Each structure stands twice: as structure tokens, then as C-alpha cells.
Amino acid sequence: MLPPIADRFVAGESPAEALEHVRRLNDTDVKGIVNLLGEHYDDREAVAADAAEYRRLVDDIAGSGLAACISVKPSQLGLDIGEDVFRSELTAIVDAAAERDVFVWIDMEDHTTTDATLDAFETVAREHGGGVGVCVQANLRRTRTDVRRLANVPGTVRFVKGAYEPPPDIAYTDGARIDQEYRTLLEYAFEHYDGGIAVGSHDPAMIEHAKALHERYGTDFEIQMLMGVREDAQYDLADEYEVWQYVPYGERWKSYFYRRMTEGTDNLRFALRAVLQS
Ligand code: FAD
Image (tube, rainbow, N blue to C red; front, side, top):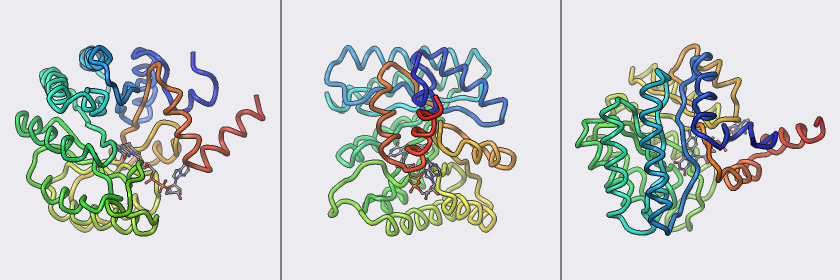
């Protein structure tokens, strides 16, 4: 059992708890992106164990009839050990998922992993003609070029501002500049992509921008937010748009939970209120 407060951001320690959370979400028309927490493995056994759990999760999702998909991290699938390890585990998961018609997202980690992640995405996306998505980070200076490259690849692209802090020669560091870049990237995608756009942001201004671009270009898009963040907005948006919630679970919940606590004053305010009321 997760302690109170943590259970706002993490669905539980087991896949069954994660899918139970998705079941409740689906009742509000929000769909679930299930993520087994884990990253930066230097041990082949840990990689194999998480990869096997993802393949079981794919079966469970397919058998459950839930509106759900999965999201994996490259370093969870062995990228720190070797690109070949990551590619072979990713391919096995995507093959299994394609057979069961379950979508697979690939999260984007720090800037040293961008090339390997995009290359692996492109390979599996072309092989399956879609069914996979990858995340791009607006704070990276290279992303405009990446987004142009991805226009010709089947699959879906999740646009985020970027959760990592690369050095200034690699990334924009000013918040307003990152917001401006995010808007520009979305504009390019709505104009040139044939659908396959996911707006991964809690920022009302970015979501309004996406809605306006959708009106202008008619391109389809979906909105993605994290479990525990602006959930009321997620339910409201789901009345009109396709909304997916990123649902993390697993025994390694502590570092994910502390990250949520330290990154946003709203999260912190919520946590303090919950502690005072308990
Ligand atoms: P921010 O710039 O943090 O905030 C802008 C505004 O949004 C705030 O002023 C406020 O109005 C509103 N807001 C934000 N947080 C809250 C809150 N807690 N409560 C109320 N209002 C709030 N990053 C990666 O680097 N790689 C990934 O693979 C990745 N995947 C992601 C998947 C999803 C589904 C999401 C939602 C994010 C993901 N991220 C990923 C994280 C992302 O890069 C950002 O760090 C994170 O989403 C914060 O940026 P933001 O656009 O949500 O808004």
C-alpha cells in the first residue's frame, strides 16, 4: 500500500492496481498510459524483468478491454548497458503489443539519449506502420530538426517542455523561451503532420494554443497529463477532446514521487494540505 499523498501521483505497486486505476479513469472518458517505474539499469536481469512485465501488461490490457497503452523508458530497457540491448527489448515489446493492438510510447530521457531513442523509434514505427509514439522536448535546441524528421515517420509524437536540465549550449534554459519554442513546434506539427500529435502539458496556455491550431488546421490531437496533476481539467477536457493520463506504478515509486513534490508549488501545496488534514 502506498502512503497517502504518494497515492495521488502513483497508482500502486502492482500492475493490477494500475489497471484498476485506469478502469476508474475510463469511467470519466480519460484513457490510461501505464508506466512501470524504473530507469537507468546497469544490470541485464533488471532490464529483462521489466521488459517481461511490460509484455504481461500488454496481454492484461488487451484482455481487459480497457482504453490503455504503455510507456517505456529507454534506460529501463537497457540503454545504459548498450543500444543493442535497448533495441532488442523494445522490439520484443512492440512486436507483442502490435499483435494485441496495444499502443507503445517511448519516453524521452536526458539529451545524451535523444539520437538512440529517435533511431529506435523510427525503426519500430516503420516496421509496424505506427502503433508507437515518442516524446520530444521543446527545451532542446535540436528539436525543431527532429520534429521535421518525424513528420515522415508513422506513429505519434508527444510534445513536452522537457523534464531534464541540459547545459545551455544544448538547451534553452529560460521558461518563456521554452514556452515560445513549444508553441512553434506545435504549430509546425499541426501544419505538417497528418494527426499523431500528443500535447503533453498541464499548461492551460499551451492547451489553448493547441485547440486554436486544431481549429486552424483541422489536425487531430490528443492531450496528455500526469496522474495527480490538474485532474479536474483532465475530466473537463475529456468531454471534448481525447485525453490520456500517464499512470505510473511499481515498487520504485519513491524517486518519482519526490520529483513531483519538488517540481511544482501546486503539488507541494496539495501535499502540505493533505498532511495537515490527516
Ligand atoms: P509547466 O511549465 O510546469 O507549468 C505551466 C503551467 O501549467 C503552470 O503555470 C500552471 O498553470 C500549470 N500547471 C503545471 N503544473 C501544475 C500543477 N501541478 N497543478 C496545477 N497547475 C499546474 N518530460 C520529458 O523530458 N520526457 C518525457 O518523456 C516526458 N513525458 C511526459 C508525459 C506526460 C503525459 C506529461 C504531462 C509530461 C511529460 N514530461 C516528460 C514532463 C514535461 O517535460 C514537463 O516537465 C512537465 O509536464 C511540466 O511542464 P508543463 O508543460 O506541464 O507545465
